[in-house]
Image 1 (cartoon, rainbow, N blue to C red):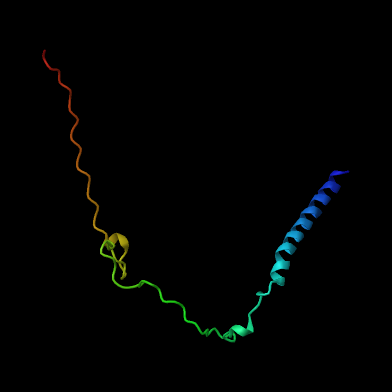
Image 2 (tube, one colour; image 1 turned 135 degrees about the horizontal axis):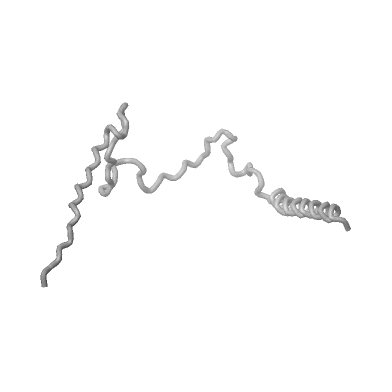
Length: 106
């Protein structure tokens, strides 16, 4: 067999394998009895107004911050820019002059 024939068979085989996998996933999904809405459950008619309300959360999501929360250093609520609101950086201390080694008499 030539290289072109082998390549053609390989591509055809991959396409066939992909179609078989797609069929293996779609056929059970289409045959399942609970694939669509059930009329006996009393749907909302498609208007999004279900009979049940969602459950309320167990804890509040808003409110006061926790006691261990650290506030930000700067609040950006006006026309000022961040470098204008930050405190100036501390300068490093000056270095000590280098010591000259001295000989000790013995």
